[in-house]
Image (cartoon, rainbow, N blue to C red; front, top):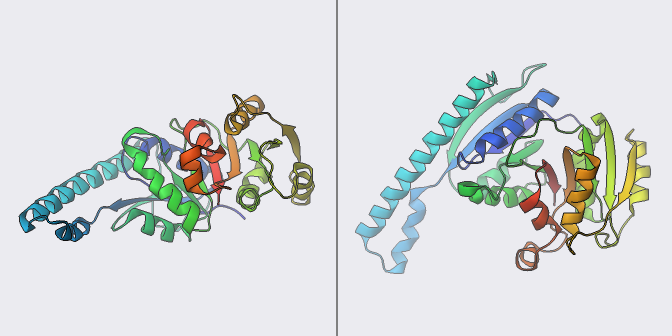
Length: 288
């Protein structure tokens, strides 16, 4: 299936420009439309603090400060979007992509980011999120996890620095899980147009399920020629070994399942998903 609609939630400007550039690369590959979405904080969410013993005046002051901060951030994000599309000659149009070209639009809504982004992502072929460890945009991880856990659609995590190419040399992190199978499906359009595809597997990474050789046979049915490479952990980190194997291949795109273990376990103990999110310099397509 071709990619026609991309959703790009923007919470700030620190990582937003790299994410915009990444989304634009994808849009130009697929002649798709990018909807840049900014979710403003609703100052009325401060109201429940009344039950915490705060006076009405204190709550009103907090609501006012929240509204001003939200307004300032919204203006900054919109200005960054306008500046970016002007500098890069992007056609601003409505949400329906025009034949043979990439387009973009900007939208601002008010509410809970994790709820709204997950809902809107259900009708996007791909959601691009800024890197979750990029200064003031660390809150964008809320959007990342919302899309992963509550949209049913793939998410592309943009690197801190926008790539120059994307999807020409594709790596699949395969461990036999339902999550990695979903990632294969989400990456299928990319693999079908890629110059080279490599399946990355490791004994320490594999779970109960089909092995890498079975995946290669399956991909061949979809006209994708892939090779298998077995990697080893680096300093006992499976995620580091996977990233090293992707670099050795010269990959410009990685697809993998996310959180085969629970998110809480990965937060406390670490895990492949967490390591890749924190350390990858490549676009990462993830599915849950």
